[in-house]
Image (cartoon, rainbow, N blue to C red):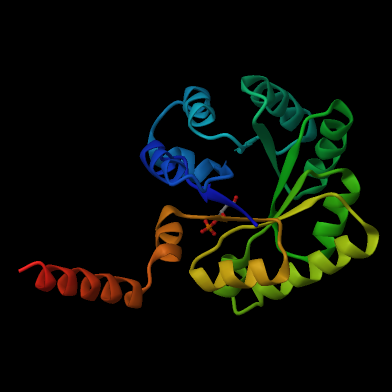
Length: 214
Ligand code: E4P
């Protein structure tokens, strides 16, 4: 499973990339706004740091506007994947982008029917938001299983990116189900590494070693 970081923070991206485990980056308008930096220069910097897909979202809500913004974003770097919301206008834009060879990440997916339509429109990536579904007492990971089954039934090439990951169990379940990508905040990437028995074991090894050196 590919691991993406869900942030527009350069320090976090740099740190995660230095661990050698980063396969890509997802950004969204909220994450970019938090950084208080200009969008395009920020994307250029991110592209320099990571060798993988970098999702950049359009903010237009009409097809023509999405196409204009998306074509512009795609020109920044070959790594850019244009993120488009899962609306009727968005799906129209996805079809045109696919015909032009521009890769899309269809975002804000909350149902299997939305995911089916995104794949039929030619999405490169679909982003179902598991955490936000769990927040309203729905089964986020259940949606991932449904989408994987549907895509498998019809051999769609669209990659399933598990978005809105909140904790390591979302990552474990995604990997068990065979999702293609998981995108997560830096804090979750760090949690994936940690285990109290690793810390305790290391502490014991080092203290035993020290004692033997006296
Ligand atoms: C995905 O691309 C989104 O940026 C993201 O995963 C949303 O996560 P949130 O629900 O924690 O905001």
